[in-house]
Image (cartoon, rainbow, N blue to C red; front, side, top):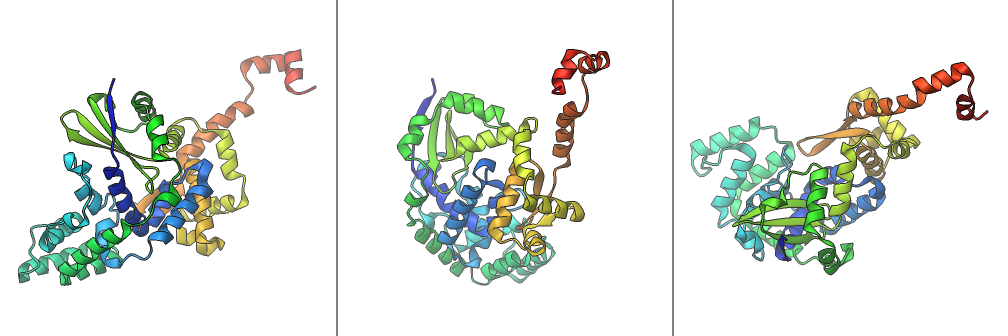
Length: 360
């Protein structure tokens, strides 16, 4: 039997970072963290949380913006494998000084950590890297701002992390911590993880430390702590998230597909994508005159039904038709349009089976 322990500190740390990640990557979060059977509830949850954390200074964009791999600098730095994940988080310990912070930012976004902005050659190299990078104008502006006054950028980061750590999570709690602890079973969780295709193998560990998140309620993350011990970060909706992932790998459910497509607004979105090839959320808002919340709601249902897929390009998310899904729907529907050999034989013979099937 695996040894299970629970800790609060890692979940609190991840929740704090998630607030800022949501702020700077709202479209990504709405596209990926909304479940089909709770689309409106999840969308409203994230919208309320975004409003709660707003505003956040643009200077913090390089720390929390997700790159093309879906990673942020802050989580890469503060969620490395190791026992330090179990310690209470202190914002002032993220970077030892402004130079270390600048190096980490330049390495993460430009791959030029060795360049020294305090000398002319180093600054020219960094400027050239920023100009030729694929970063959007907001990120480029934030990078230049950081280079001009790194000490101020570090002060803003520590100050904002400290301030947002004081937000109360009670309003957003779906289940109590005690309920989550009582319901967690490592064996069933491991089976669910495998069936959903998530690359976590708990059988490798003797000790499993579990920490629950409140804001990041769909979080499923495993970190190796060494010595046969791992840390599981789980959002309060982790079971529903696994179920949603598992359903997306199965044959298309016609009832889910029917619910998603049986609405004129979603058909309008689908036809807009068909014409353009792919669209952004702003395209949907402008062309179809939807509000942002309404557009996210409909798109989330279509994403979770697997009708459309997404790709990230910088901060923007683009939506396109999942043609493989529609091919599979066609294959499933074919059985209703093609007579089986037995039914055809009964039809030719005018037998009772055919009459019964036709309701005669």
